[in-house]
Structure formats: C-alpha cells, structure tokens
Image 1 (cartoon, helix red, strand yellow):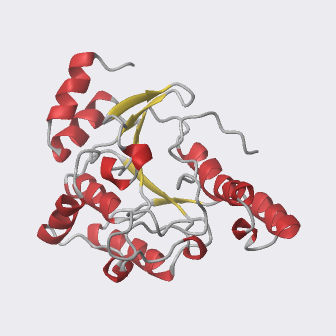
Image 2 (image 1 turned 60 degrees about the vertical axis):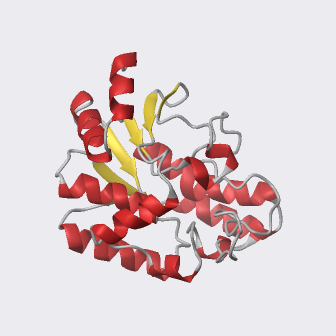
Image 3 (image 1 turned 90 degrees about the vertical axis):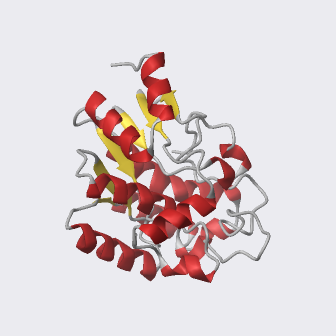
Length: 237
C-alpha cells in the first residue's frame, strides 16, 4: 500500500498521538519504531505505550552501550509493563572485525568506524525492518545539518517502506517539556552534557554552544552519521 498525498498531509498536520494512531491503522501490524533510548525516542515510546498502539518497538544493542543506557531500558519496560525487542549484531561479524582490526580500531580511520557501525547497527536494523511497511524514528531537523531537509514522511525505495519522523519539526525544548510533563524516564547522562548518546567509546559530553552531535565520533571531521539514516546505497559489507 502507498499513501496518498492527502493521507500524508493529514498525518503531517496532526499531533504526535494522532499521527502515530493514524499510521498504525493504515498499516496494521506493519509499523515498527527503532528506539536508541534517547530523549526523543523516549517521547515516542511514551506515546505508543500509554495509548496502547499496535506498534512494535525495538532497540539495537551494539554491545558497547553505556551502563546507564541498559538501566534505562530496564526502567522503561518496568514503567510501561511492555516489552522492547532487542536486536544484536551477528557474533561472527563482531568476532572477525575485532580479531582482524582490534577492539577499538574505529579510532584509527573513518572506514573502520563505519564498518563497525555497519556491523553493530546497520545490519541488525535491516533485520529488524524485515516485513515492515513503516519505520518510525525520533529524528529532529535541528539535530544536524544533514537532517534539516528531511520530510516527516518519506518513501525509501531501497528499503521498500515509509520512514515516519513524527518529531522532525519539534525543538529540543519541546522534547524536554514533554519529558518533564509526563514524567518520561530518560538517561541520566543527558543531565551531564550527553545530548546525543550512542556507544560509550564513541560518545562524549558536549560543551555549551557546541552542536548537539559534536559529542558523537568527536575525533572525526566527517559527517556525523552512522549509516542508519543515510539514503545512499550501503557500500560497507
């Protein structure tokens, strides 16, 4: 099924709760949400769980996450009494990468870092999206320059599904206000300057005035993306 122009316009004009409910009704049993357990994703998780929407929530465990992130996952499932499916990288891929290139070889080159991200994040994501018609994300336009032009709803030809970014036009202040108003559980690292939280070896706190994603892969000068939201064909195998 493909969305009509009017369907897209209606969804884009609705509230978060209404948009999520509408998309879940249009694609019953075919809507999934990928959560990194960041503040934005926790907002969407709250909206899905408290409204009992038939949307599968999953997260990617790279094996290198912060302890606080694992604790948040536990607190979130306990709070809502609902499960979040966890996808892991293929053990053989990780073993081969670490054996041949080293446990922290992602510091040595952009190519190594992207290969590590591909193994630990992109490949598990592709497995998680199998059979889905809609992929929901917590992306916001102001997070980085590469996301400023992202639409709320887009068709991904290479994945043959829709990508729905319901918070794309939200500000960071709006996210924080929602978290505070509804007592949404969040990662305590956010209070210590970690705005965008990924793998522990690849994330640092940012300084006042720095770009929100400056703390991700801070040793690189390249575009700060891991490959999950890059539309170009995947080249790392």
